[in-house]
Image (cartoon, rainbow, N blue to C red; front, side, top):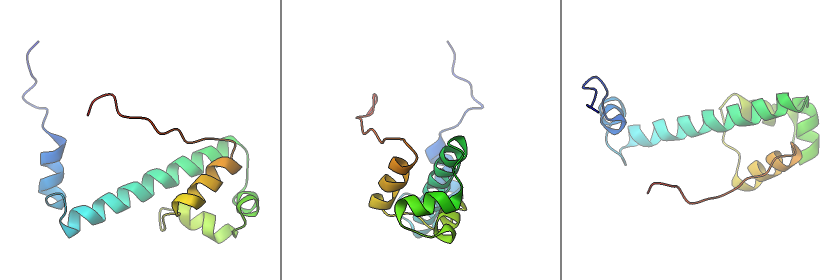
Length: 101
């Protein structure tokens, strides 16, 4: 099998777009990407369970606007809040070692 010369290294692309790992720009990108992923996970899980933002907020002891800000990726929930949200939606978090280091 021959390597495709059109496929590049993602680290190289990110380095060019956002700077090297540890740079303020790269850290900001990582933070925004993480917030987006978390927001989509929570939004999709909430929708699949047919739960409103208000109901989810009530289940975790927060307000609707807090859930809305999380789902828009404007804020990142703390780890404990994330676990409460996941549990309130009938999900669980499983932590495993990656297959490839």
